[in-house]
Structures are given as structure tokens and as C-alpha cells.
Image 1 (cartoon, rainbow, N blue to C red):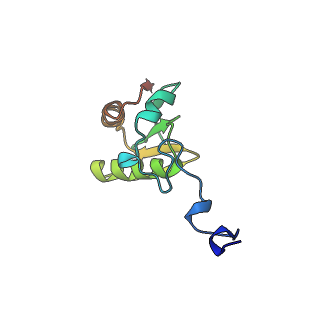
Image 2: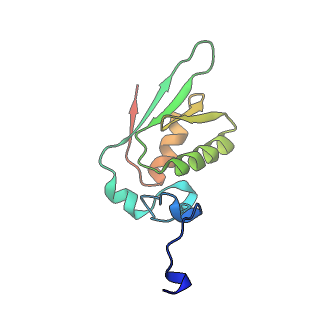
Length: 119
């Protein structure tokens, strides 16, 4: 048996989970948004809503986004930079400070997502 055929243990990127959309590790989807594969697999619309939180300006919530968790982080980073606000990803839901529903709806629809605005 040649050395290259020998089974070895690896903790490198080969052991990571590939992106469900592009199949690569790390994800190669443009701007964290999935390509044609995501458009074909989206069965329900992305939910976009606004929630008041105490005395603050509230949160815009983006739920049911069919995207790899790393892609969600990248997308949130893009939104935060463009809007000049804070935000986080909690349990797969993007939370962006302030009422930014119009901007986010426009961006997601331009990327090919179906978006449903709640409340």
C-alpha cells in the first residue's frame, strides 16, 4: 500500500460541513447569498418583521432565510456596514437594530428571495 492511499485522521477543512448551496468549504456563494441552487430550493418566503424592545428603537427580524449559518453572518455584516447599525444572529434569525424593513426587503428581493413582510 502506497503512502498516499493510507487512511489518516485529519482536523483540517476536509472534515468541515460543505455549504448546502455551492457545495464548497468555505462557502463560495457571492456575498454570502446562495446562487441558482438556492432559488430552486426555496419553498417558503423569508419572513421580515419589526419588533419593539423596551425603550429602544426596536429590531428588524429576518426569519426562515434558507442559507448556511456562515452566509447569514456574512449577510448580516454587509447589512450592518451599509446601514451603520448593530445587529446579531440568534438561533438562525438575523436581528438588525431599527426599522430597516424597506431596505432589507429590497436587498433580499434583488438577490432572488421571496419575502413576506409581517406586521
